Length: 397
Image (cartoon, rainbow, N blue to C red; front, side, top):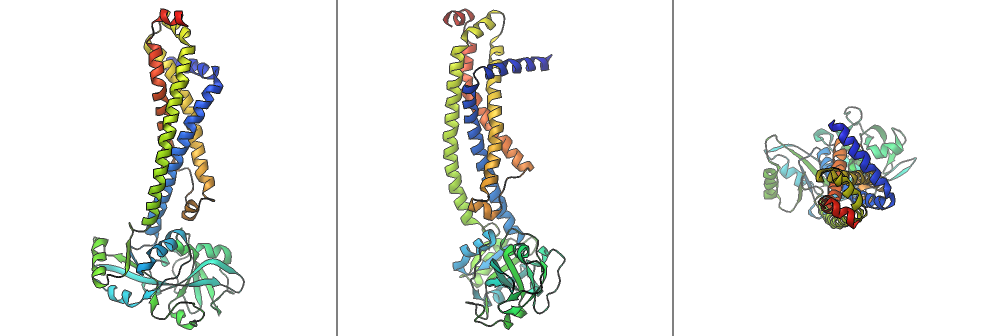
């Protein structure tokens, strides 16, 4: 019986919605735009935050050390795969590698862009790494770790898409053999060409550009289990206070600041959209209440209670806002999906809309907010209409 009553109310409400379809479509559109904006903002925030956190975790390091002037530059390489070269003295690594709370430490040297005998990869960063102490590169190899021999290199997933495993590549005028590639990490490692530390001495200083012997670019540190990275950072600063130190939580700080500013703009826009949707719902149902006073008076006269009237008109508002909400969720997901290839921040961080539990939850939350605002706007006119005396409603209609 209860389900039959619900079905009857919805059927009556749907007839009411279709009676003035154009006017109700405008309210649906207002709710849809609000939900789309809210969905886009939450997906945008989630995608960027997730990618920053994942990028720092994929490196396998708890602490990253770079030259103090290169912290922003290093983040651009880690998060956005932008080709960078910066250097500091190797003694920085030698001074801290044996600290008691450090489990593993390794370093990379960033050199010039890759050129090969068959192609030129404009976005390929040559990375010299120490195989003996490595814990950053090896875990990502498509096929298990293999000790590189003289003249052999690994390539990142981006470079592999262009080169493949070929034997005709050349690096700084020296022939090299590509013997393995990394899985996609969605960090700067994807654009890397990884050569042995021992092969660096075979390259002439002229070929390596601004690099000088005894320099390194970046240090990766993994702390022992149960040790706070903050404690190790303090020990490092006691030894060398001039270096640039970043923990996992610090990586992407500038991007997070920019994201915070963007979200403030989104918040203002969403607030304005919410007020407009609220006012539009109020005006729409005020007009509707004036138009249907006689109908309500007749229903009350034949025995309908206030609660029945409220249910019918709130059901109309619910149908309108639900349809608008569904359209808005689809619009929000479509926006972030199609803007991902044109929006620099989304594209470089790999943020795209996909069907996941988290994204579905975001859509439902945004839809719930849109429905709630529409119902709030419609509630006062509906309540006023339901409380009218039946004879007065019929007489004044």
